[in-house]
Image 1 (cartoon, rainbow, N blue to C red):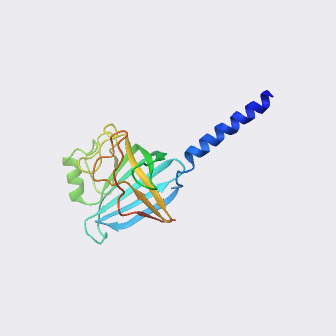
Image 2: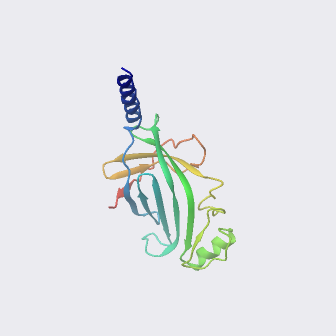
Image 3: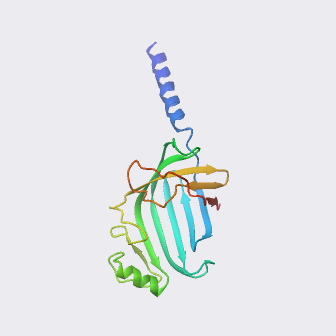
Length: 185
C-alpha cells in the first residue's frame, strides 16, 4: 500500500511539472536578422545558455562594420504571458559583455565613454562586463538580467519590444518586437 501511494504521488508530481512547462517553446538553435537598421543580430540558444552577437555597421547595406557587442549568459523560460498571446516570459541572465571596435571612430567613442578599463584599439575585443558602455549596454551590475518575452512561430522567433529597459525585475515588455529572428541553422 505504501509503495502504491508513493507511486501515485510521484506520478502527480511529474504531471504537475509537465503541465507547468508544456507551454514553453523550444527556442534552441541559431537565429538571426541579416541586416536591419544597420545592425546584424545572431543569437545562439542551447538548452539554457545564450550568446547574442550584434554587429553594428557604418552603412545601411551592412557592408562596413563599426563595432560588435557580444552578450553571453544563461536563460530560463517562465510562465505564459497574460498580456501577449502565445508569448512566454523569459529571464536572460547576462554573464559577460564583449565589445570590439572595428573603426577608429568607434574606438575613440568607446574610450571617451569609459567602455571598459582600457585604451581602445581596432579589432581587439575587450570585456566590458563591469563598466558597460553608455548608449550600448549597461554593466552587468546595473542590469544583471533582462526580463523579456519570447514567442516562437514556425521558423520565426519574436522577442519583446526593446524601446524601454528590460532590466526591472518582474516588468515585462508590453508588446513584441515586430521584426523576428529567423532560423539560421
